Each structure stands twice: as C-alpha cells, then as structure tokens.
Image (cartoon, rainbow, N blue to C red; front, side, top):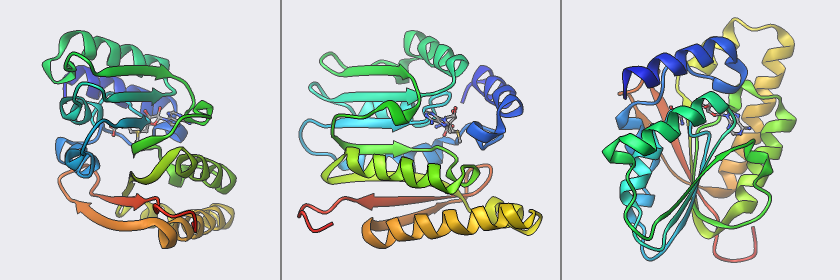
Length: 216
Ligand SMILES: C[S@@+](CC[C@H](N)C(=O)[O-])C[C@H]1O[C@@H](n2cnc3c(N)ncnc32)[C@H](O)[C@@H]1O
C-alpha cells in the first residue's frame, strides 16, 4: 500500500463515507483472501472487480491473469480511478502479461448490465446502503456471474455491530433488513468464509458460488 493511496483513500472517506465505507485501503492479507478462488483458476477467465478503490485487490488480481484473461475493474470515484491509472502506468504489480486485457472503468457497478464473469471480487460497503440498493446490487452481481463462478465479498467483523448499538431505530431497521437480504443470498450461494484479522478493521471474506444447474 503506497502513501499516496492511503492519503487519497482517507480524503475520499472524509468526503464520501457512504460510498467509501472504510478509513483505509484493504491490507495485502485481505487482498490475497479476496482472490483466493481466482488463484485456483483453470483456463481463460473473465474477472469483474467491483469497487477497485486504490487497487488493493487489483494488485493481487493482475499477476494471476494469463494470456486470454480479462479484468474489468469498476470504480465510481474519478479521483481513485486517476490514481489507479497512475499505478497501472508505474507499478510492477500492476503490469499485466501480454495477451491479458484490463479495462479500468469509471462507472457505477450497476451500469455493468451485460456480460458474464467467472469471478467477481466485490468490496462495496453494503452495510452503508439502503436495503433496496443492497438487493439490487447483489441480484445484479449474481446475474453477472457464470454458472460455477465465484463471487467474493468483504464485510467488517465488528464495525456493523458497533454501528448498530449506537444507531437510531430507523438505521437499526435498515441494518436488520440488509442482514436479512445478505443471509438470504448466503443461504443459497455461500460455499466458504474466512476471517482476516490482519486488516483495519478485521474483516470477513465470504465466498458465494453460482450453481452449475438451472435450479437456483
Ligand atoms: C470499502 S472501499 C474498497 C476499496 C478497495 N477495493 C479496497 O479494498 O481498498 C469501497 C469502494 O467502492 C466504491 N464504490 C462504492 N459504490 C460503488 C458503485 N456503486 N459502483 C462502483 N464503485 C463503487 C467506492 O468509491 C470505494 O472505492
């Protein structure tokens, strides 16, 4: 994690807590956990990264890609995309092999309305979002996943509980509904979860897989 990245991330956190959801970029340990299934890939793959930020997951994804693979890295915040472009231009971890396609997309992930991905690495702060948006985004992500594809996403271990304790009744109700939505998806798709303590704050990584059959 570079000083520039950390500084810019923190500035954006202060400007837009709703979309950023974190004070610091994810750690290298969390980055590696996010790509654990991608690291076992076989054959050519298409990868979607949702909420690339300053590139904590991107820098783990790029070295795993082989000729024929594609990464679409989507980030809403133009300042973070500008920094990511600079990292792609200058940092060794961001140099892809010949034959790998990397698309850096400055957009809302909800605009990714077509295409199918083998892996989706997702780090949007779902707990900040209203329930209708959580439902919309998770439904879209599962629609964009190929059968057999793996969706990984991160969720802070303590922060939500802490926030819950000190929130107004209406916020508590939103958080309860969000939990129920996430649990309903997890009941259908979850194949694994892992705690990453070497991150500020400690974080769960959840792995969901879309079944190969049509009975989803
Ligand atoms: C918790 S940060 C994670 C950043 C980075 N992946 C990391 O782990 O350090 C969430 C990121 O998602 C981005 N984001 C939030 N809502 C988004 C949306 N609807 N579409 C695309 N990116 C979004 C934010 O701008 C922010 O960079």
